[in-house]
Image (cartoon, rainbow, N blue to C red; front, side, top):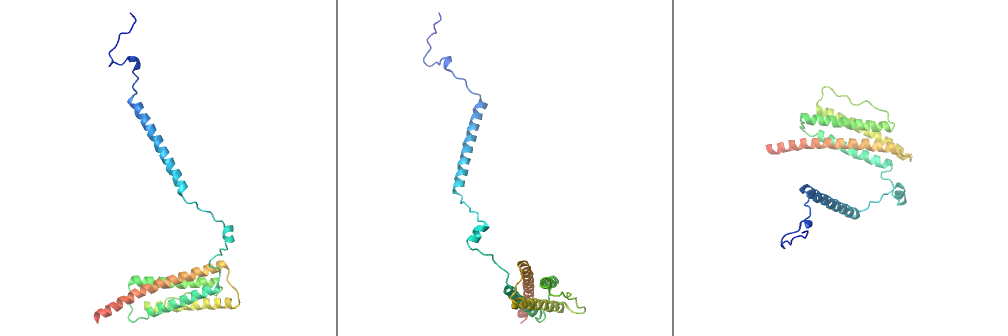
Length: 220
């Protein structure tokens, strides 16, 4: 009576039926596998990139000294004298431009030229003070004169300051002396700044002169 009846071949016994997992559990397993695969992929890429990246060697000051590398731009009075010569040439260029016949400047150009030339002279006075030259009062505006005459006065004052600096540097050089590194850097800075301001002024004046030439050619 306890014997199990024979079942047809296409019927699966209940003892062999496995539990079906919930949809949420199945999805969670897939997501976990995806996370692990992604992490493994990123780690392999980072490892490969680290192996391919070039190694940067760290060079210490001792290594630089061992290789014989010397500092650039050691204090040299002759270098400063060369700068004064360049400045003198730039002053002459601007002076010639200001003397151009019938030169007329716009209000914005007048503002720029005046400010730049004032800055030039201020930088040269600062350089002279570092060289131990007695300071002189900045040029006062000459009343009753036009802007061009005023600018030419700035040029004259600036060239006077530059001549004083050059004489002092020549005196230092003739004695076989030199300036200390801190003074050298400051003098270079002031001379370079003055040079930049003069170059800018020359560019402004050149544009104005070019405009005058264009108008004259059209009239002819």
